[in-house]
Amino acid sequence: MPQASSYHHGDLRAACLRAARELLEEDGGSGLSMRAVARRAGVSPTAPYRHFAEREALVSAVAAEGYRELAGHLAAAHPAPSTPDELAAVAAAYVRFAVRHPALFRAMFAEPCDPADEERAAATAAITEYVRGIVHRVFPGADPDALSTAVWALVHGLAFLHLDGKLDTSTPDAVTGRVRAAVLAAFTASTATPQTAAAPSGQAPASRTSARRGGRLPGR
Image (cartoon, rainbow, N blue to C red; front, side, top):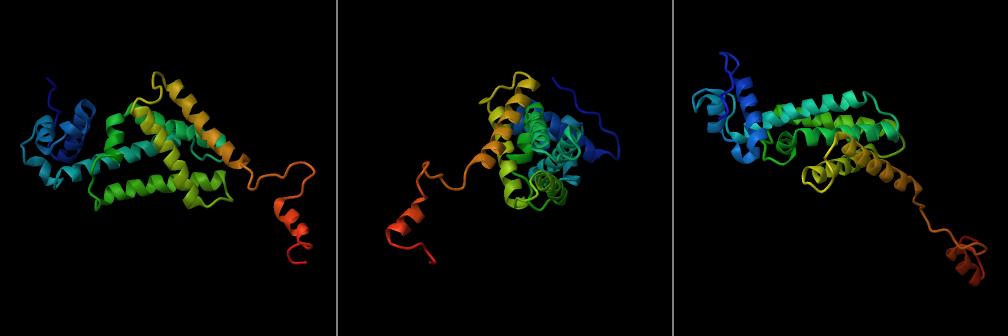
């Protein structure tokens, strides 16, 4: 039977957050309730309400912690990525974080949270700006908002494919290799795709050929 987390006077909020994270890792979101957190922290059933109005507020605070930890993890992978390969390394770090902390990651992105929670909003905004900054450095000519959304969607999708057992998570190297290959393949494909189909050798483009048949070129 798990023992209650130690609680010291004046540190109730931290004790509740610690208890909530322990419960998440053990049972996922289904085992997380205000009463369970109080029991795990070794405090009265009403004590957590001094800092968290409801379960969603508690989950939001846990998610905010997760976002800050994720930001540190990504910065450790590379502090200022400026090439596609460095971006791929950060993407792999993102997915490894999800695989290492599955319950926390799901709480960050899949659990209902308090939309008015300023701490969570600030932590989420920091990650968003971090991704946007990377995209701007790596692809300075691209629309940073549109491309950062696309990059985050790609990497986030890879994270959940790993969490849901669709991709190999047997070793960190397996995760890293798969993610780096997928991200670099996406970047390569996007730059290699021609904007218009090339005309067969010796044949003029269709628009110009049609114009010649009509006796003139557009604008002539």
